[in-house]
Image (cartoon, rainbow, N blue to C red):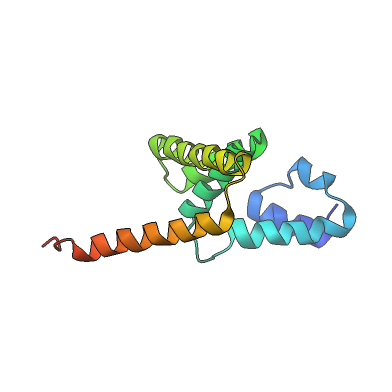
Length: 134
C-alpha cells in the first residue's frame, strides 16, 4: 500500500487509484508507483507509442492478460492502429519462438554472437553499396 501523498499523485495522473495498487506490499508501494510513473507515463527516450508497443510485445510473450490489455490500450492512446498491434504481437511471438529453439537446442552463445555480428556487417555493407534514392 502506498502513502497518502502517493495516492493523491496517482489520482492526479489516473483519475483514481487502481485496486491492484493496494496489493503491493507497503515498503514497495511508493517505489512501484514511481517506476510506473517515470517509465510508462514520464517523458523518456522512448515515445508513448514505442513504450506501448514494447509493453504489448512483452505482455503477449509472457502471456499476461492484464498487461496485454493495459498495453494495448496504452498503445491505442498513442494512435497505434489495430494492424500495428497485431504485427507487434507477431514480432513478439517470433522472438519467443526462436528463443525456444535456441535455448532448447543449447546453441552455443559465442557462436551465435559471432554469426550475428557477421550477418549485421554483411547487411550494413549491402546497404552502403545500394544506390541512394533521390
